[in-house]
Length: 330
Image (cartoon, rainbow, N blue to C red):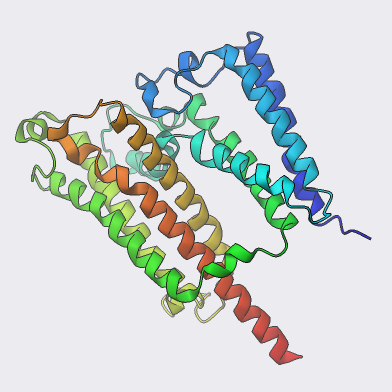
């Protein structure tokens, strides 16, 4: 008898697709809230892959959701056929990497800053969490969720997972160092600006920019550098056993998902943000004399891909170690 354990992922992904398809149809019929193109208040529509669309595009989104639902249901059969996977992975990639844009990462990055601003009395020009998470940005979490649900169903369907074996501990270590190196390219530019060094910008740009820019830039650089330090946990012992300086947890085993879930999410939004900057750079909206404001971000897909590879390698290594420990206890 076939287990329903892998099947529920496919049913959940299909339910999401049908629900979002209904919402897209409602937008096409005139429901307010279409989050892209003419319904997006952002002045830079090149930021989004769907920035050129109108609410009538909701019919195409609904058709895409119907295809997604059919693919997800095909993944519930568990008959081992490869055909559903040829649709599932491209659809998941579109939902996760193409539909969202860089504002999703900005919302995640700015949220901690917005929470501490009132405590220190800093002035961010009146910006609040509502500015970081308007509806067009909040909506991006929905396609991301759908893509992850479909990817989970595809992984459960394809039990062999032969590609996962490519992520060896050695390759994972290299991926960690690549991830840290690329993230520091961005951090160095923002720290330089905070110190008054016009790296990648003109002196006039630096002088004319408000003080808020340096506060936010230095914060984002520090935030990125801290993320790089945490990435080291994917290859260091403290990523498997809590170090001594952590009260109550010292010496305990680090649950793998405590590292895998946030690292996977960050790798996704970093790739998404980088692809958005590449799209915008391709339109010629960025001046070359201000390359520091956009060129480092164009390398973010490498950063995110390396972080994702390191995360998969970490998960694989932890799982293999747990299997070996279980066998030795038998």
